[in-house]
Image (tube, rainbow over all chains, first blue to last red; front, side, top):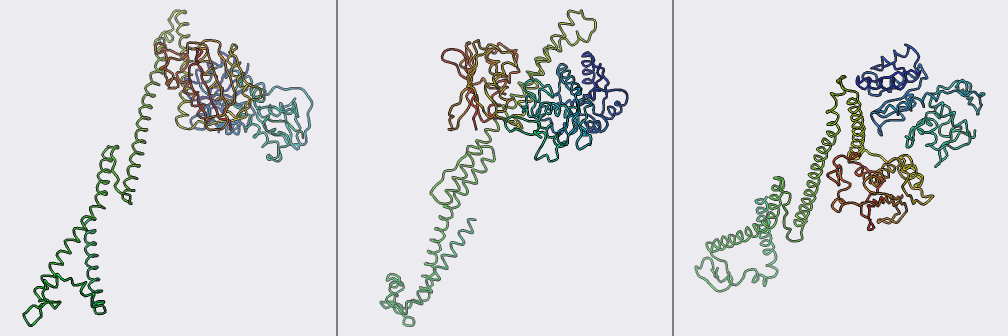
Length: 224
Length: 371
């Protein structure tokens, strides 16, 4: 059973989500503030964090940032702002995905399961691409010998692209393969995540060597 | 202003008189014949050829007696002054009249009467000023009228929204106790819960649509345009909603720069309406044509074979919360579907038109410019 750390300040919403998530089969640990959530991390294993953004005190983005400094646990942001949600800021803070409130439990469930799948390990030997070493078994990526800290989503994106190098993936395909959003997911997620990934693994982001843009089609890994 | 005008007029006239007198005294010695011109015969005769010291008149020009001269000067000066003042007043009225009329008109306008206009007379700068004033008054009247209309529409909208929100709340309020009770029979509780669930979904849709519409109203809606294959987009839209019986005639390879999500919203609303309020077969046809402004546009027609739109509804069908069939108070949608579709089309620079097909059924035509 996977454990969800739910961070939501509104008591009614917190109660509702706790109820819904536990009926879906998740163990739920609830926190009403960012500070309580960060403390709660130490109280036992957490498989995924569902993080509301409008929190009193430390806001959701900051909580996510602090979370990332100590853990690679997947984070799903809950936001009331649909179109306005700053995806780039969210991914920059380290989130893996976002859900717009009010969230139907079905949708939340699907996102949680998708995000947990990101950390699925596939046993295959480490691959070397130029300066990058990608180990699918241990889920470690090295660049010039140094481990690169990647969120589960960035990692999955890299694995999907490099798994079929030279194949061009459209944004829709990537949305489906990495985020498992259904029809008409937000393709801005893909662009923002590619930018984050490039910032971490490319030597020169203006001339990307690993994650290349194919204009009018999408993205492709290499040729290196 | 008027006093200044008249005073300056008089001063100028007197100075002119002085100057001409001075010029005459300079010139006449050189042109004695001019003296006759300057001193007209009548005046000489009147003044008489009074020779000083003799007490007698004599014919011909002479030096007039002091008293006569004084009277003459005073009379002439009086006449001159009167003429000058008269002319000054006339000129002042010519200039200040329109100015006063404009001032009165402006005062009337600030009092609230925006329909006041002034008649321009002549073609000089004053007439231009009057014409400019009239143009400004018309523009102001138009703008204020527009704002008043907008305010009325906003109030109407707020009223409609409150009503629409109250409807699902009514059902839920009715059964809230049943659910919270804990003593209700299972069947009742289940029925109540199902009702609440249904109304919640309705409310969610309504709120989502309201947020969407308010974004358009606030001007903060943005277009995320991307090259889209129209045939694929249409197919995806229909498949995602399991609308299998819809016939599509979309040329292959037709690629247009569209906001995919918004295009989906438009098509889904039109096809949904066709299936719900029209009757099958529902057809979707896409093509490119030359638009009114000359550029090319994507034309998407959604047709159904139902009863069509009532004649008085056609002009209102895109209004917010408009329900063509007033008896159908409860609709599955939020009442904002077509309004949102129209705004989405407008955001692309296009529009949607509603009409009845001569062969029966309604046809909605979406036109989106192809840049």
